[in-house]
Amino acid sequence: MSARHHVQSPATTPDDDADLARWDDDGAPPAQPRSSPHLWLRVGAELGDRLVALSGRQDLLVTCRPGTRSGAPAAFFPTLGEVEFDAGLFAPLQPHEIHPRIVGDEERYPAAWGVFVHEAAHAAHSVWTQPAGENPRVVEAALLLEESRVEGAHLITRPTDRTYLRTSARTLVMPDIAHPTLKGIEHAAAVAALVLGRRDVGILDAGETRAVADLCEKVLGTNLLATLTRIWTAAHQCADHDTTTMLAHAKEWCDALDTAAPALPVPENLTDLLSGAVGIVMDSTAATDAADLAAQAAATNALAAQSKAQAQDRAQRAGQRRKAAATAKSVFNTRGTTVTPDGTPAPYGNPVTGTRRPTAAEKSAAARLSRALRAAAYRERTEERTTSPTPPGRLNMRAALARDAQRAAGSVPTAEPFTHTRRRNSPTPPLRVGIAVDVSGSMRAACAPVASAAWIVARAAALTDPDSLTATIAYDQHLTALTRPTHRAPERVTTFDANGGHHNLGDAIDALDHGLELSRPGAGRLLVIVTDAHYGSDETAQAVTRIKQLTTAGCAVLQLTLTAKSHHLPGATLLHLPQPSSAPAAIATAATDAIRRTR
Image 1: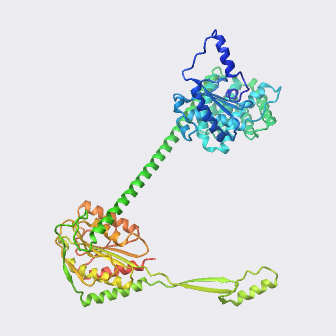
Image 2: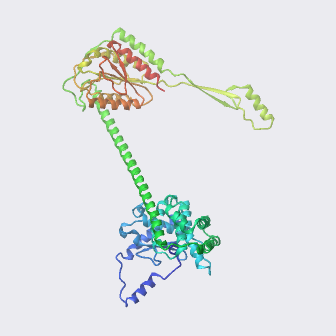
Image 3: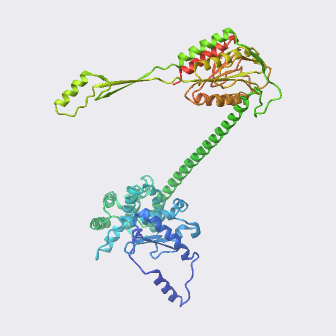
Protein backbone atom coordinates (compact mmCIF):
# COMPACT_ATOMS: atom_id res chain seq x y z
CA MET A 1 0.00 0.00 0.00
CA SER A 2 0.97 3.67 -0.02
CA ALA A 3 2.52 3.44 3.40
CA ARG A 4 5.32 1.33 1.99
CA HIS A 5 6.45 4.05 -0.39
CA HIS A 6 6.30 7.46 1.23
CA VAL A 7 8.61 7.04 4.25
CA GLN A 8 11.71 5.19 3.13
CA SER A 9 14.98 3.93 4.51
CA PRO A 10 18.15 4.89 2.59
CA ALA A 11 18.82 2.79 -0.49
CA THR A 12 21.58 2.73 -3.08
CA THR A 13 22.72 6.11 -4.35
CA PRO A 14 22.12 7.30 -7.92
CA ASP A 15 25.85 7.01 -8.63
CA ASP A 16 25.78 3.35 -7.61
CA ASP A 17 22.79 2.75 -9.86
CA ALA A 18 24.57 4.46 -12.76
CA ASP A 19 27.69 2.32 -12.28
CA LEU A 20 25.62 -0.88 -12.15
CA ALA A 21 23.77 0.18 -15.30
CA ARG A 22 27.08 0.83 -17.02
CA TRP A 23 28.32 -2.68 -16.16
CA ASP A 24 25.02 -4.26 -17.16
CA ASP A 25 25.31 -2.53 -20.52
CA ASP A 26 28.79 -3.96 -21.06
CA GLY A 27 30.47 -0.66 -20.33
CA ALA A 28 28.54 1.47 -22.79
CA PRO A 29 27.37 4.95 -21.71
CA PRO A 30 23.94 4.83 -20.06
CA ALA A 31 21.02 5.89 -22.22
CA GLN A 32 19.80 9.42 -21.51
CA PRO A 33 16.10 9.71 -20.72
CA ARG A 34 13.90 11.80 -22.93
CA SER A 35 14.05 14.63 -20.36
CA SER A 36 17.63 14.94 -19.12
CA PRO A 37 17.92 14.77 -15.29
CA HIS A 38 20.15 17.82 -15.05
CA LEU A 39 17.34 20.00 -16.42
CA TRP A 40 15.29 19.12 -13.34
CA LEU A 41 17.94 20.28 -10.87
CA ARG A 42 16.54 23.81 -10.85
CA VAL A 43 12.99 22.51 -10.33
CA GLY A 44 14.18 20.41 -7.37
CA ALA A 45 16.02 23.39 -5.87
CA GLU A 46 12.92 25.60 -6.15
CA LEU A 47 10.77 22.85 -4.63
CA GLY A 48 13.24 22.77 -1.76
CA ASP A 49 12.73 26.51 -1.22
CA ARG A 50 8.95 26.05 -1.02
CA LEU A 51 9.34 23.03 1.26
CA VAL A 52 10.58 25.32 4.02
CA ALA A 53 7.18 27.04 4.24
CA LEU A 54 5.24 23.78 3.85
CA SER A 55 7.10 21.73 6.45
CA GLY A 56 8.72 24.33 8.67
CA ARG A 57 12.11 22.63 8.18
CA GLN A 58 15.23 24.08 6.59
CA ASP A 59 17.38 20.95 6.68
CA LEU A 60 15.78 19.06 3.79
CA LEU A 61 16.89 18.45 0.21
CA VAL A 62 14.49 17.88 -2.68
CA THR A 63 15.66 15.83 -5.64
CA CYS A 64 13.55 15.86 -8.77
CA ARG A 65 14.34 13.49 -11.63
CA PRO A 66 12.51 11.20 -14.06
CA GLY A 67 11.78 8.09 -11.99
CA THR A 68 12.60 7.47 -8.33
CA ARG A 69 14.67 4.94 -6.43
CA SER A 70 11.66 3.80 -4.41
CA GLY A 71 9.39 3.38 -7.42
CA ALA A 72 6.75 5.61 -5.82
CA PRO A 73 5.74 8.98 -7.26
CA ALA A 74 7.53 10.56 -4.29
CA ALA A 75 9.14 9.50 -1.02
CA PHE A 76 10.55 11.01 2.16
CA PHE A 77 13.84 9.66 3.57
CA PRO A 78 13.99 10.75 7.23
CA THR A 79 17.56 9.63 7.87
CA LEU A 80 18.87 11.35 4.74
CA GLY A 81 16.76 14.47 5.12
CA GLU A 82 15.66 14.08 1.51
CA VAL A 83 12.39 14.24 -0.39
CA GLU A 84 12.50 12.35 -3.67
CA PHE A 85 10.14 13.52 -6.41
CA ASP A 86 9.29 11.95 -9.77
CA ALA A 87 9.47 14.51 -12.58
CA GLY A 88 6.82 12.52 -14.44
CA LEU A 89 4.20 14.02 -12.12
CA PHE A 90 4.61 17.32 -13.97
CA ALA A 91 3.70 15.84 -17.37
CA PRO A 92 3.11 17.18 -19.93
CA LEU A 93 5.00 20.26 -18.70
CA GLN A 94 8.70 20.50 -19.44
CA PRO A 95 11.32 21.73 -16.91
CA HIS A 96 11.60 25.20 -18.44
CA GLU A 97 7.83 25.65 -18.01
CA ILE A 98 7.85 24.90 -14.27
CA HIS A 99 8.71 27.57 -11.68
CA PRO A 100 7.71 26.39 -8.19
CA ARG A 101 9.49 29.32 -6.55
CA ILE A 102 6.72 31.61 -7.85
CA VAL A 103 3.79 31.38 -5.45
CA GLY A 104 0.70 30.46 -7.47
CA ASP A 105 2.61 28.57 -10.17
CA GLU A 106 1.45 25.34 -8.50
CA GLU A 107 -2.07 25.94 -9.80
CA ARG A 108 -0.84 24.77 -13.23
CA TYR A 109 0.14 21.31 -11.90
CA PRO A 110 -2.20 20.54 -8.95
CA ALA A 111 -1.57 16.77 -9.02
CA ALA A 112 2.21 17.14 -8.69
CA TRP A 113 1.83 19.81 -6.04
CA GLY A 114 -0.62 17.66 -4.09
CA VAL A 115 1.95 14.86 -3.91
CA PHE A 116 4.58 17.39 -2.85
CA VAL A 117 2.32 18.70 -0.06
CA HIS A 118 1.79 15.11 1.09
CA GLU A 119 5.55 14.57 1.32
CA ALA A 120 5.90 17.90 3.13
CA ALA A 121 3.38 16.62 5.67
CA HIS A 122 5.56 13.52 6.18
CA ALA A 123 8.65 15.70 6.52
CA ALA A 124 6.97 17.82 9.18
CA HIS A 125 5.20 15.10 11.19
CA SER A 126 6.72 11.67 10.44
CA VAL A 127 9.54 12.17 12.94
CA TRP A 128 9.10 9.12 15.16
CA THR A 129 11.88 6.56 14.70
CA GLN A 130 11.56 2.85 14.14
CA PRO A 131 13.23 0.91 16.99
CA ALA A 132 15.67 -1.82 16.08
CA GLY A 133 14.27 -5.33 16.03
CA GLU A 134 10.63 -4.25 15.76
CA ASN A 135 8.21 -6.57 13.98
CA PRO A 136 8.18 -5.46 10.29
CA ARG A 137 4.44 -6.13 10.05
CA VAL A 138 3.76 -3.80 12.98
CA VAL A 139 5.98 -1.12 11.44
CA GLU A 140 4.12 -1.53 8.14
CA ALA A 141 0.80 -1.02 9.94
CA ALA A 142 2.17 2.06 11.71
CA LEU A 143 3.25 3.55 8.38
CA LEU A 144 -0.20 2.81 7.01
CA LEU A 145 -1.85 4.73 9.86
CA GLU A 146 0.72 7.48 9.36
CA GLU A 147 -0.67 8.37 5.92
CA SER A 148 -3.87 10.03 7.12
CA ARG A 149 -2.37 11.17 10.45
CA VAL A 150 0.23 13.44 8.85
CA GLU A 151 -2.28 14.93 6.44
CA GLY A 152 -4.63 15.72 9.31
CA ALA A 153 -1.78 17.33 11.27
CA HIS A 154 -0.78 19.32 8.17
CA LEU A 155 -4.31 20.67 7.76
CA ILE A 156 -4.21 22.17 11.25
CA THR A 157 -1.45 24.60 10.28
CA ARG A 158 -2.21 24.93 6.55
CA PRO A 159 -5.97 24.40 5.98
CA THR A 160 -5.79 25.95 2.50
CA ASP A 161 -3.78 22.93 1.29
CA ARG A 162 -6.86 20.69 1.54
CA THR A 163 -7.56 21.00 -2.18
CA TYR A 164 -4.08 19.75 -3.06
CA LEU A 165 -4.23 16.89 -0.55
CA ARG A 166 -7.50 15.76 -2.14
CA THR A 167 -5.72 15.73 -5.49
CA SER A 168 -2.78 13.76 -4.05
CA ALA A 169 -5.20 11.11 -2.77
CA ARG A 170 -6.25 10.41 -6.35
CA THR A 171 -2.61 10.30 -7.46
CA LEU A 172 -1.25 8.13 -4.63
CA VAL A 173 -4.06 5.79 -3.56
CA MET A 174 -5.41 4.49 -6.86
CA PRO A 175 -2.16 2.90 -8.18
CA ASP A 176 -1.68 1.02 -4.91
CA ILE A 177 -5.24 -0.32 -5.01
CA ALA A 178 -4.75 -1.82 -8.47
CA HIS A 179 -1.35 -3.34 -7.53
CA PRO A 180 -1.66 -4.32 -3.85
CA THR A 181 1.12 -5.72 -1.70
CA LEU A 182 -1.42 -6.97 0.85
CA LYS A 183 -4.04 -9.63 0.24
CA GLY A 184 -7.51 -10.47 1.45
CA ILE A 185 -8.87 -8.86 4.58
CA GLU A 186 -5.66 -6.88 5.17
CA HIS A 187 -6.05 -5.36 1.73
CA ALA A 188 -9.60 -4.19 2.54
CA ALA A 189 -8.45 -2.86 5.91
CA ALA A 190 -5.64 -0.90 4.25
CA VAL A 191 -8.08 0.64 1.77
CA ALA A 192 -10.32 1.64 4.69
CA ALA A 193 -7.38 3.27 6.48
CA LEU A 194 -6.26 5.18 3.38
CA VAL A 195 -9.69 6.37 2.24
CA LEU A 196 -11.85 6.52 5.37
CA GLY A 197 -8.92 7.75 7.46
CA ARG A 198 -8.65 10.73 5.14
CA ARG A 199 -12.39 11.21 5.55
CA ASP A 200 -12.05 11.41 9.33
CA VAL A 201 -9.29 14.06 9.20
CA GLY A 202 -11.29 16.23 6.82
CA ILE A 203 -9.52 15.59 3.52
CA LEU A 204 -12.43 13.75 1.91
CA ASP A 205 -16.16 14.22 2.53
CA ALA A 206 -18.39 11.53 4.00
CA GLY A 207 -20.67 11.52 0.96
CA GLU A 208 -17.73 11.04 -1.38
CA THR A 209 -16.39 7.99 0.47
CA ARG A 210 -19.70 6.17 0.90
CA ALA A 211 -18.89 3.53 -1.75
CA VAL A 212 -15.70 2.47 0.07
CA ALA A 213 -17.40 2.65 3.47
CA ASP A 214 -20.25 0.36 2.33
CA LEU A 215 -17.90 -2.16 0.68
CA CYS A 216 -15.50 -2.29 3.65
CA GLU A 217 -18.40 -2.77 6.06
CA LYS A 218 -19.63 -5.65 3.91
CA VAL A 219 -16.18 -7.28 3.64
CA LEU A 220 -14.78 -6.54 7.12
CA GLY A 221 -18.01 -6.61 9.09
CA THR A 222 -19.46 -3.88 11.24
CA ASN A 223 -17.53 -4.80 14.41
CA LEU A 224 -14.08 -5.05 12.78
CA LEU A 225 -14.58 -1.83 10.82
CA ALA A 226 -15.62 -0.03 14.00
CA THR A 227 -12.51 -1.35 15.77
CA LEU A 228 -10.22 -0.27 12.94
CA THR A 229 -11.93 3.13 12.82
CA ARG A 230 -11.29 3.58 16.54
CA ILE A 231 -7.63 2.67 16.05
CA TRP A 232 -6.90 5.11 13.22
CA THR A 233 -8.90 7.81 15.00
CA ALA A 234 -6.70 7.33 18.08
CA ALA A 235 -3.59 7.36 15.88
CA HIS A 236 -4.65 10.74 14.48
CA GLN A 237 -4.23 12.16 18.01
CA CYS A 238 -0.74 10.72 18.43
CA ALA A 239 2.14 13.18 18.85
CA ASP A 240 4.78 13.36 16.13
CA HIS A 241 7.59 11.99 18.33
CA ASP A 242 5.55 9.35 20.21
CA THR A 243 7.01 6.14 18.77
CA THR A 244 5.66 3.96 21.58
CA THR A 245 2.04 5.00 21.17
CA MET A 246 2.17 4.80 17.38
CA LEU A 247 3.57 1.26 17.46
CA ALA A 248 1.01 0.30 20.10
CA HIS A 249 -1.80 1.38 17.77
CA ALA A 250 -0.14 -0.56 14.94
CA LYS A 251 0.11 -3.71 17.08
CA GLU A 252 -3.55 -3.36 18.06
CA TRP A 253 -4.34 -3.05 14.34
CA CYS A 254 -2.53 -6.30 13.55
CA ASP A 255 -4.14 -8.11 16.51
CA ALA A 256 -7.63 -7.01 15.41
CA LEU A 257 -7.02 -8.33 11.91
CA ASP A 258 -5.54 -11.61 13.19
CA THR A 259 -8.54 -12.16 15.47
CA ALA A 260 -11.25 -11.39 12.94
CA ALA A 261 -9.71 -12.53 9.65
CA PRO A 262 -10.22 -16.31 10.00
CA ALA A 263 -13.96 -15.89 10.42
CA LEU A 264 -14.44 -13.52 7.47
CA PRO A 265 -14.98 -14.81 3.94
CA VAL A 266 -12.87 -13.14 1.28
CA PRO A 267 -14.57 -12.42 -2.07
CA GLU A 268 -12.66 -13.86 -5.00
CA ASN A 269 -12.69 -10.55 -6.88
CA LEU A 270 -11.90 -8.41 -3.82
CA THR A 271 -9.19 -6.42 -5.59
CA ASP A 272 -11.56 -5.53 -8.43
CA LEU A 273 -14.31 -4.61 -5.97
CA LEU A 274 -11.97 -2.38 -3.99
CA SER A 275 -10.61 -0.78 -7.17
CA GLY A 276 -14.14 -0.06 -8.36
CA ALA A 277 -15.20 1.45 -5.02
CA VAL A 278 -12.08 3.59 -4.78
CA GLY A 279 -12.58 4.64 -8.39
CA ILE A 280 -16.09 5.84 -7.52
CA VAL A 281 -14.68 7.80 -4.58
CA MET A 282 -11.98 9.41 -6.67
CA ASP A 283 -14.41 10.25 -9.47
CA SER A 284 -16.70 11.85 -6.90
CA THR A 285 -13.87 13.92 -5.41
CA ALA A 286 -12.73 14.94 -8.90
CA ALA A 287 -16.26 16.06 -9.77
CA THR A 288 -16.55 17.99 -6.50
CA ASP A 289 -13.17 19.65 -7.02
CA ALA A 290 -14.08 20.53 -10.61
CA ALA A 291 -17.36 22.05 -9.46
CA ASP A 292 -15.57 24.02 -6.72
CA LEU A 293 -12.97 25.18 -9.22
CA ALA A 294 -15.67 26.24 -11.66
CA ALA A 295 -17.51 28.10 -8.91
CA GLN A 296 -14.28 29.78 -7.83
CA ALA A 297 -13.49 30.71 -11.41
CA ALA A 298 -17.00 32.09 -11.85
CA ALA A 299 -16.63 34.12 -8.65
CA THR A 300 -13.24 35.37 -9.80
CA ASN A 301 -14.62 36.31 -13.20
CA ALA A 302 -17.58 38.03 -11.59
CA LEU A 303 -15.25 39.96 -9.30
CA ALA A 304 -13.04 40.89 -12.24
CA ALA A 305 -16.07 41.97 -14.24
CA GLN A 306 -17.29 44.01 -11.29
CA SER A 307 -13.89 45.63 -10.87
CA LYS A 308 -13.76 46.37 -14.59
CA ALA A 309 -17.25 47.84 -14.50
CA GLN A 310 -16.33 49.97 -11.49
CA ALA A 311 -13.18 51.16 -13.22
CA GLN A 312 -15.18 52.00 -16.33
CA ASP A 313 -17.75 53.76 -14.20
CA ARG A 314 -15.03 55.78 -12.45
CA ALA A 315 -13.48 56.65 -15.80
CA GLN A 316 -16.90 57.60 -17.17
CA ARG A 317 -17.62 59.78 -14.14
CA ALA A 318 -14.22 61.42 -14.41
CA GLY A 319 -14.82 62.10 -18.08
CA GLN A 320 -18.26 63.47 -17.27
CA ARG A 321 -16.76 65.76 -14.61
CA ARG A 322 -14.18 67.06 -17.07
CA LYS A 323 -16.87 67.64 -19.68
CA ALA A 324 -19.09 69.35 -17.08
CA ALA A 325 -16.21 71.64 -16.08
CA ALA A 326 -15.62 72.57 -19.70
CA THR A 327 -19.36 73.15 -20.25
CA ALA A 328 -19.65 75.33 -17.13
CA LYS A 329 -16.63 77.37 -18.18
CA SER A 330 -18.06 77.98 -21.64
CA VAL A 331 -21.64 78.69 -20.46
CA PHE A 332 -20.78 81.08 -17.63
CA ASN A 333 -18.73 83.33 -19.86
CA THR A 334 -18.48 87.04 -19.12
CA ARG A 335 -19.87 88.07 -22.49
CA GLY A 336 -23.24 86.38 -21.96
CA THR A 337 -23.10 84.57 -25.30
CA THR A 338 -25.00 81.44 -26.17
CA VAL A 339 -22.88 78.30 -26.62
CA THR A 340 -23.36 75.00 -28.38
CA PRO A 341 -23.09 71.64 -26.56
CA ASP A 342 -19.38 71.42 -27.45
CA GLY A 343 -18.69 74.83 -25.87
CA THR A 344 -18.27 76.91 -29.02
CA PRO A 345 -20.27 80.16 -29.46
CA ALA A 346 -23.60 79.62 -31.19
CA PRO A 347 -24.07 81.69 -34.34
CA TYR A 348 -27.73 82.32 -33.52
CA GLY A 349 -30.45 81.50 -31.02
CA ASN A 350 -29.63 83.75 -28.05
CA PRO A 351 -32.92 83.92 -26.07
CA VAL A 352 -31.92 87.00 -24.04
CA THR A 353 -33.98 90.02 -25.04
CA GLY A 354 -32.49 92.55 -22.62
CA THR A 355 -32.55 93.63 -18.98
CA ARG A 356 -34.84 95.76 -16.83
CA ARG A 357 -35.01 97.23 -13.38
CA PRO A 358 -36.63 95.04 -10.71
CA THR A 359 -40.09 96.05 -9.64
CA ALA A 360 -41.03 96.98 -6.08
CA ALA A 361 -42.88 93.69 -5.74
CA GLU A 362 -39.77 91.75 -6.78
CA LYS A 363 -37.62 93.67 -4.27
CA SER A 364 -40.14 92.98 -1.54
CA ALA A 365 -40.27 89.30 -2.49
CA ALA A 366 -36.45 89.08 -2.37
CA ALA A 367 -36.42 90.65 1.10
CA ARG A 368 -39.07 88.24 2.37
CA LEU A 369 -37.22 85.26 0.91
CA SER A 370 -33.96 86.46 2.47
CA ARG A 371 -35.58 86.58 5.92
CA ALA A 372 -37.11 83.15 5.39
CA LEU A 373 -33.76 81.71 4.32
CA ARG A 374 -32.00 83.18 7.36
CA ALA A 375 -34.64 81.73 9.63
CA ALA A 376 -34.39 78.34 7.95
CA ALA A 377 -30.60 78.39 8.13
CA TYR A 378 -30.49 79.32 11.82
CA ARG A 379 -29.14 76.58 14.08
CA GLU A 380 -29.43 76.51 17.85
CA ARG A 381 -26.25 76.69 19.85
CA THR A 382 -24.98 73.35 21.05
CA GLU A 383 -24.22 72.75 24.72
CA GLU A 384 -21.53 70.45 26.03
CA ARG A 385 -21.42 69.71 29.75
CA THR A 386 -18.30 68.33 31.44
CA THR A 387 -17.50 67.55 35.07
CA SER A 388 -14.18 67.84 36.86
CA PRO A 389 -12.81 67.48 40.41
CA THR A 390 -11.43 71.04 40.35
CA PRO A 391 -12.65 74.49 39.21
CA PRO A 392 -13.64 76.18 36.97
CA GLY A 393 -17.27 75.27 36.91
CA ARG A 394 -20.44 75.35 38.96
CA LEU A 395 -20.20 73.55 42.29
CA ASN A 396 -22.55 70.63 42.81
CA MET A 397 -22.97 70.25 46.61
CA ARG A 398 -24.16 66.66 46.44
CA ALA A 399 -21.07 65.64 44.48
CA ALA A 400 -18.86 67.67 46.86
CA LEU A 401 -20.28 65.89 49.91
CA ALA A 402 -19.84 62.54 48.17
CA ARG A 403 -16.22 63.40 47.45
CA ASP A 404 -15.62 64.37 51.13
CA ALA A 405 -17.22 61.10 52.24
CA GLN A 406 -15.01 59.09 49.89
CA ARG A 407 -11.92 60.86 51.15
CA ALA A 408 -12.97 60.29 54.82
CA ALA A 409 -13.51 56.59 54.13
CA GLY A 410 -9.93 56.32 52.85
CA SER A 411 -10.90 55.48 49.27
CA VAL A 412 -9.78 57.23 46.12
CA PRO A 413 -12.24 60.11 45.45
CA THR A 414 -14.11 59.63 42.18
CA ALA A 415 -16.87 62.24 42.50
CA GLU A 416 -16.43 65.34 40.32
CA PRO A 417 -18.32 68.26 41.95
CA PHE A 418 -17.63 70.98 39.35
CA THR A 419 -19.81 71.20 36.21
CA HIS A 420 -18.81 73.34 33.24
CA THR A 421 -21.17 74.12 30.35
CA ARG A 422 -19.64 75.03 27.02
CA ARG A 423 -21.87 76.57 24.35
CA ARG A 424 -20.91 76.65 20.70
CA ASN A 425 -22.52 78.37 17.75
CA SER A 426 -23.52 76.04 14.92
CA PRO A 427 -22.42 77.21 11.48
CA THR A 428 -25.12 78.51 9.17
CA PRO A 429 -25.26 76.49 5.94
CA PRO A 430 -25.06 78.45 2.68
CA LEU A 431 -27.50 78.00 -0.19
CA ARG A 432 -26.92 76.68 -3.68
CA VAL A 433 -29.82 77.06 -6.15
CA GLY A 434 -29.61 76.23 -9.84
CA ILE A 435 -32.46 77.00 -12.22
CA ALA A 436 -32.68 75.39 -15.66
CA VAL A 437 -35.46 76.87 -17.79
CA ASP A 438 -36.65 75.35 -21.05
CA VAL A 439 -36.78 78.00 -23.80
CA SER A 440 -38.27 75.86 -26.53
CA GLY A 441 -41.37 77.24 -28.23
CA SER A 442 -43.84 75.50 -25.90
CA MET A 443 -42.49 77.27 -22.78
CA ARG A 444 -43.12 80.91 -23.78
CA ALA A 445 -45.56 81.45 -20.90
CA ALA A 446 -42.83 80.70 -18.32
CA CYS A 447 -40.32 83.30 -19.51
CA ALA A 448 -41.49 86.32 -17.52
CA PRO A 449 -42.17 84.56 -14.17
CA VAL A 450 -38.92 82.54 -14.33
CA ALA A 451 -36.89 85.65 -15.12
CA SER A 452 -38.46 87.30 -12.08
CA ALA A 453 -37.86 84.18 -9.92
CA ALA A 454 -34.21 83.96 -10.98
CA TRP A 455 -33.58 87.54 -9.90
CA ILE A 456 -35.50 87.15 -6.62
CA VAL A 457 -33.64 83.95 -5.62
CA ALA A 458 -30.23 85.38 -6.58
CA ARG A 459 -30.91 88.62 -4.67
CA ALA A 460 -32.22 86.83 -1.57
CA ALA A 461 -29.31 84.35 -1.52
CA ALA A 462 -26.74 87.16 -1.70
CA LEU A 463 -28.47 89.00 1.15
CA THR A 464 -28.67 85.84 3.29
CA ASP A 465 -25.14 84.49 3.26
CA PRO A 466 -22.02 85.66 1.38
CA ASP A 467 -21.20 82.02 0.60
CA SER A 468 -24.56 81.38 -1.08
CA LEU A 469 -24.59 81.00 -4.87
CA THR A 470 -27.30 80.82 -7.50
CA ALA A 471 -27.30 80.51 -11.28
CA THR A 472 -29.87 80.27 -14.05
CA ILE A 473 -29.43 78.69 -17.48
CA ALA A 474 -31.82 78.90 -20.40
CA TYR A 475 -31.59 75.86 -22.65
CA ASP A 476 -32.93 74.57 -25.89
CA GLN A 477 -30.38 72.90 -28.17
CA HIS A 478 -27.95 75.60 -26.95
CA LEU A 479 -27.14 76.97 -23.48
CA THR A 480 -27.32 80.57 -22.25
CA ALA A 481 -26.47 81.82 -18.75
CA LEU A 482 -29.10 84.23 -17.44
CA THR A 483 -27.44 84.63 -14.02
CA ARG A 484 -23.97 83.45 -13.03
CA PRO A 485 -22.67 81.85 -9.81
CA THR A 486 -21.21 84.98 -8.20
CA HIS A 487 -21.49 86.31 -4.64
CA ARG A 488 -22.84 89.67 -5.81
CA ALA A 489 -26.57 90.27 -6.09
CA PRO A 490 -27.69 91.05 -9.66
CA GLU A 491 -28.75 94.68 -10.19
CA ARG A 492 -31.14 94.09 -13.08
CA VAL A 493 -33.55 91.38 -14.21
CA THR A 494 -32.51 89.54 -17.37
CA THR A 495 -35.46 89.03 -19.70
CA PHE A 496 -35.62 86.31 -22.33
CA ASP A 497 -37.95 84.69 -24.83
CA ALA A 498 -38.67 81.07 -25.80
CA ASN A 499 -38.32 80.44 -29.53
CA GLY A 500 -35.87 77.52 -29.55
CA GLY A 501 -36.12 73.94 -30.69
CA HIS A 502 -34.88 70.63 -29.29
CA HIS A 503 -33.53 70.32 -25.74
CA ASN A 504 -30.18 70.00 -23.97
CA LEU A 505 -31.12 69.62 -20.31
CA GLY A 506 -28.31 67.15 -19.60
CA ASP A 507 -25.55 69.66 -20.34
CA ALA A 508 -27.47 72.41 -18.53
CA ILE A 509 -27.56 70.28 -15.38
CA ASP A 510 -23.85 69.49 -15.75
CA ALA A 511 -23.01 73.20 -15.96
CA LEU A 512 -25.14 74.06 -12.91
CA ASP A 513 -23.79 71.08 -10.95
CA HIS A 514 -20.17 72.04 -11.57
CA GLY A 515 -20.68 75.79 -11.22
CA LEU A 516 -22.65 75.55 -7.97
CA GLU A 517 -21.23 72.26 -6.57
CA LEU A 518 -24.71 70.80 -6.26
CA SER A 519 -23.26 67.30 -5.68
CA ARG A 520 -21.15 68.45 -2.74
CA PRO A 521 -22.74 68.25 0.74
CA GLY A 522 -22.52 70.98 3.35
CA ALA A 523 -24.99 73.44 1.81
CA GLY A 524 -28.69 73.71 1.09
CA ARG A 525 -28.83 72.50 -2.51
CA LEU A 526 -31.71 72.79 -4.95
CA LEU A 527 -32.06 72.30 -8.68
CA VAL A 528 -35.21 73.73 -10.27
CA ILE A 529 -36.14 72.56 -13.78
CA VAL A 530 -38.86 74.57 -15.51
CA THR A 531 -40.03 72.44 -18.42
CA ASP A 532 -42.92 70.49 -19.89
CA ALA A 533 -40.42 67.63 -20.61
CA HIS A 534 -41.65 66.96 -24.13
CA TYR A 535 -38.29 65.37 -25.01
CA GLY A 536 -37.00 62.60 -27.18
CA SER A 537 -35.99 59.33 -25.55
CA ASP A 538 -32.24 60.11 -25.60
CA GLU A 539 -32.77 63.61 -24.18
CA THR A 540 -34.94 62.21 -21.39
CA ALA A 541 -32.46 59.45 -20.56
CA GLN A 542 -29.54 61.89 -20.25
CA ALA A 543 -31.55 64.21 -18.01
CA VAL A 544 -32.86 61.40 -15.78
CA THR A 545 -29.34 60.01 -15.31
CA ARG A 546 -28.08 63.34 -14.02
CA ILE A 547 -31.15 63.90 -11.83
CA LYS A 548 -30.56 60.51 -10.21
CA GLN A 549 -26.92 61.37 -9.52
CA LEU A 550 -27.94 64.63 -7.85
CA THR A 551 -30.68 63.13 -5.71
CA THR A 552 -28.31 60.35 -4.65
CA ALA A 553 -25.85 63.05 -3.55
CA GLY A 554 -28.58 64.73 -1.45
CA CYS A 555 -29.56 67.59 -3.76
CA ALA A 556 -33.28 68.35 -4.02
CA VAL A 557 -34.62 68.44 -7.59
CA LEU A 558 -37.88 70.25 -8.37
CA GLN A 559 -39.66 70.18 -11.74
CA LEU A 560 -42.10 73.03 -12.39
CA THR A 561 -44.69 72.56 -15.15
CA LEU A 562 -47.34 74.90 -16.48
CA THR A 563 -49.78 72.52 -18.20
CA ALA A 564 -51.39 69.27 -17.22
CA LYS A 565 -50.01 67.71 -20.42
CA SER A 566 -46.43 68.02 -19.15
CA HIS A 567 -44.36 64.88 -18.70
CA HIS A 568 -42.70 63.98 -15.40
CA LEU A 569 -38.93 63.53 -15.23
CA PRO A 570 -38.35 60.48 -12.96
CA GLY A 571 -36.46 61.39 -9.80
CA ALA A 572 -37.62 65.01 -9.69
CA THR A 573 -40.44 66.33 -7.50
CA LEU A 574 -43.19 67.42 -9.89
CA LEU A 575 -45.06 70.65 -9.13
CA HIS A 576 -47.80 71.78 -11.50
CA LEU A 577 -48.42 75.56 -11.61
CA PRO A 578 -51.70 76.48 -13.30
CA GLN A 579 -50.69 80.13 -12.92
CA PRO A 580 -47.16 80.90 -14.24
CA SER A 581 -47.01 83.91 -11.92
CA SER A 582 -46.80 81.55 -8.90
CA ALA A 583 -43.40 80.22 -10.04
CA PRO A 584 -41.32 82.65 -7.89
CA ALA A 585 -43.22 81.69 -4.73
CA ALA A 586 -42.88 77.95 -5.49
CA ILE A 587 -39.15 78.26 -6.07
CA ALA A 588 -38.73 80.33 -2.90
CA THR A 589 -40.57 77.71 -0.85
CA ALA A 590 -38.45 74.88 -2.27
CA ALA A 591 -35.24 76.81 -1.56
CA THR A 592 -36.33 77.42 2.03
CA ASP A 593 -37.10 73.72 2.50
CA ALA A 594 -33.73 72.76 1.01
CA ILE A 595 -31.73 74.90 3.43
CA ARG A 596 -33.89 73.84 6.37
CA ARG A 597 -33.12 70.15 5.69
CA THR A 598 -29.37 70.77 5.58
CA ARG A 599 -27.52 69.24 8.51
